[in-house]
Image (cartoon, rainbow, N blue to C red; front, top):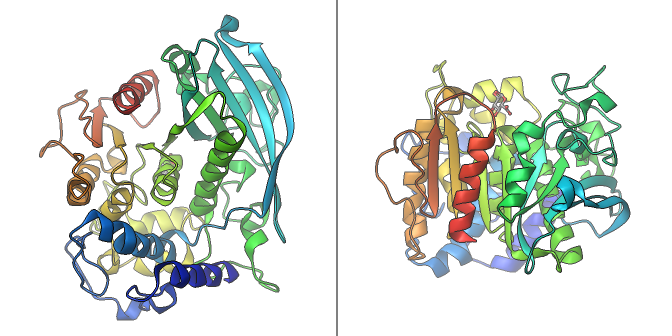
Length: 429
Ligand code: GCU
């Protein structure tokens, strides 16, 4: 709760009168039922926004607060202090000398914060200046990304489904087991770097917050999260921001701080979009097959079985979203926003939604509708938005500022996907 209070104070100080203070956001019962998508360009008090200036000064801050208040919980503040505690290794001979791979252990400190995050950084050796970099959260640990003996093996919880997982702990057998998802050779060949980290370092994906960073931000005496305190996706988004700090503050010579992209698959994609919405330093975002609670609409009939609904996601993954979000399980149409407003928060930065035909659970058609509904916000910036009105055919990349791609096949991140991510990034970087 202390976190929310801190934000409210900051909110009032920064944005002054004229905006609804987060503390005054209506209770669930007082929110009107709005079956139609809320207009991203109309403030909570009904004021219309017609300029990029007003969007940036008024509506964007309001929407950032609304998403945190009702859905994700307030992202923790930047740590009071952080450091690179140790560079675990650095190997310039990676990929037959085409890249340098290193792993750094970051340490965060605050009044009650003491936490560590391992960042695996791969950068091409052939470069004429600082390179563009993808920041990316992974599912199974950095050691799963590449088979390199120097990469540390996570000590804490990992998913049972991860290669080499034994009793929900990572083992040596997991090394390189996700290399096919990451395609480091392609990334390096195309002149990009990647800064990868494991979600479990920040908060293991279990309904229990005690092993994550969240309790570090509780008020004295608090033992469980308040209704708008950070839940797991917010904590993970915070970690993307910490990796950006690391790149911007410690790697200026090799990484171009103006060309930092964020990418993530599925639950990590939901996190990617939230991270980009909240932090302008992320210059381009690719939430891949992110679906419900990220790129797909909240307003879907609660009885649908073919796509994920808020009720389903909050039941299966009660720790991903804040307490307030559960209030909308039966009535998503009471939300004062929908997910088009989240992507709109990235305007005018490029965002690409990538999907797969067999992954209907992630609602690829609904995602396209979200881009359409966000387009008017991008148009305020005169820099293009979604440049088509119909969902494109399979394998046709729509590469406007609001990009879209759908391929045949299933829920996965593969080499074809990376080819598309790189094509999209090439256009803007
Ligand atoms: C489940 C969940 C999705 C999520 C996916 C994933 O399918 O319902 O919301 O995106 O897991 O993270 O792989």
